[in-house]
Amino acid sequence: MKRFAAALLALFLLAPVAFAQPASPPSPDKARVFFYRLPPQGGTMIWTAVYLNGEHVGDSGAGSYFWRDVPPGSYEITLRSQGTLPGQFQTATVRAGDTVYVRITSLNYFGLAGGGVGFAGGGAFMSSGALYSAPTFADQIIDPVQARQEMANLQPAS
Image 1 (cartoon, rainbow, N blue to C red):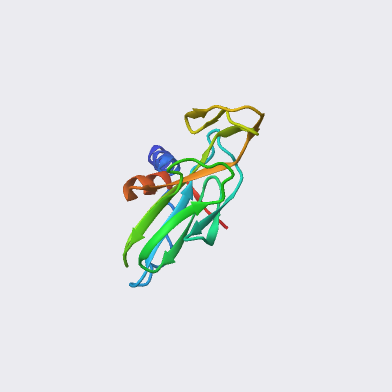
Image 2 (spheres, rainbow, N blue to C red):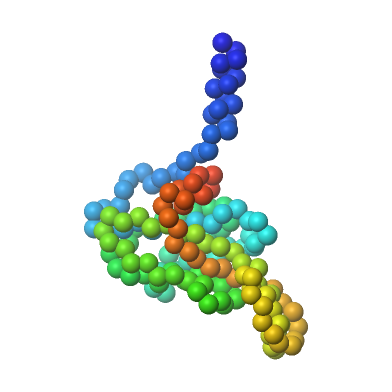
């Protein structure tokens, strides 16, 4: 019996935790958009503002998530970011009843003030000037199954 209890406890402790779903689904005329950020792996711990069509809807920190219920429509998802990259921000078109998952990623961005040899997200560019690092973020729409797995151990943003 002790072995069974120990095995059950181990299973409970090792099982992935499902992320805390909202208590109720969105109203039938809305879509739900989750925004999440994985724990840092070389990126910044700085929180960043999240915008839908230029309107501030929340803030994202490493290892956390939040959601917003929105009317059907097309939304440009942007983030407060000092560095800029091609394809950095996405647009999502949602219908009533949809659920969309947006992963926010912190990128390593280095540049040169007054010119340009720098590095951002795997690409290099040329210039001259003083080296600097800038908090840079990008967003990506993620498959729901993958997103729920990635969010399993994240905490709701406060």
